[in-house]
Length: 327
Image (cartoon, rainbow, N blue to C red; front, side, top):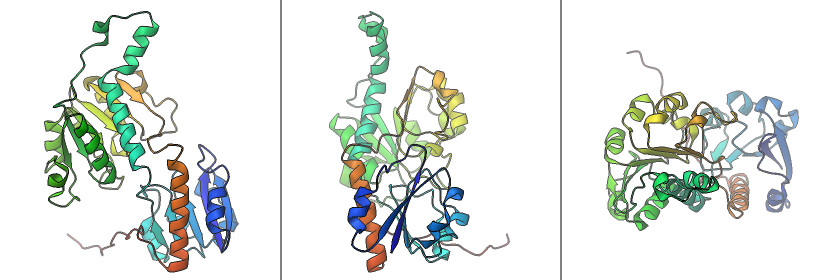
């Protein structure tokens, strides 16, 4: 068999496919395709029995139709919004993700961004570098005990974030219509029935939802207007927040911390970058020296299972396509 790794020439994740080769050397050849876009993939991709996909090269319907022999695509990440699930299903290709890697890293990074923002660490650092040791120049700092934290999404990562904030004594609530009843009791946190209810009831909103047609621009102008004087953190997916609306509302928020952005090709992402209340990190929340090898190994094992055993527990069920009905 042949296994293709589709990575990007920009900010690539796989320098050498050593981990993947170890996982497949007994039954398959591993080929690394490093391209700027799916249109740049060479003809050899049609000979691959399976694909390991990284997020900077989206696989739309036209790209998937080129995968003539492919039986499985594994998205090397939690999110799988860069793969056309309907097109893959139509071609008999199973698609899976790796939902159980990096949970600790993203949760820890969410907390790190939040604490840096709430305790105004970047501003404090700049003050001292200018020779100022007057603590009053830092500005008002909230107390974490009884601080109201809201989670948009309460899956694996949202749950891990909740446990970390609870350790500080913060009051945690969430909105997630896909989490079953009773989840809030098991975690000892509160459930909100709507996003508006969540935003209105918290001091800090942290985003932990997957990107889909339902969540794209879920945080828009109306939601940001409700966040006057509140804090916003996003370590999930950039397009969940409308970047134009955020740029317009940024001056009215108490603070913004972003690990992701709607268009990460901008350097820096302006006009937001002019705001002193904004804290950036370069889409690094998923990463640690242990997390990246873990992700690559789990993705390779998942694809091996799909191709040799017929399936894997991480296979994603494609969305149901209902026939159009006239109103």
